[in-house]
Length: 173
Image 1 (cartoon, rainbow, N blue to C red):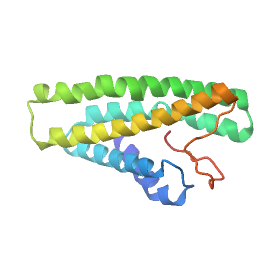
Image 2 (cartoon, rainbow, N blue to C red):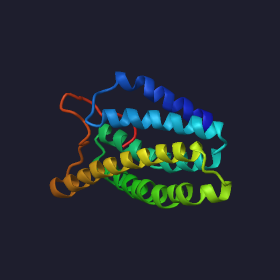
Image 3 (cartoon, helix red, strand yellow):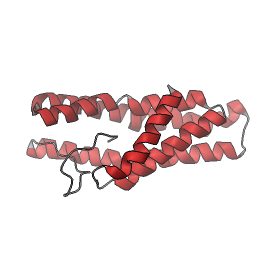
Image 4 (spheres, rainbow, N blue to C red):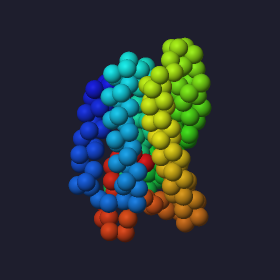
């Protein structure tokens, strides 16, 4: 699972430049690079348990998001709306709830006590996790803008897409 995820993020990083340009393309590229660094670094220093938790938290919302995009392409508006709401709930629970308040709290305040480490690995790993959290916060803002548009205008559009993009990108929110 770990190495397959690493391969997936490498492929997403390489193909990033061949996809439609979005407003958050640079953040998405940084996200992919951070994920590659986190997976590789956690593998080398044997933080695989923490790395696996981070991967699971990040991937559990992908299925309803991708299914919602498929429903949009097929013109299934009600199914898309329902899947988007499931995605929203999972996003808020995992990336805004579990990730910062459970996983990061543990790595920031408990890992050095449990593992008795204060060497550079601690700072590098947590620095990468904090940058990832900042990207989550930015994407949460964009997702909430979509929710506001959905409530006010009864339509869902990807606020990340630039005006010249003629299709939806199929990656992380």
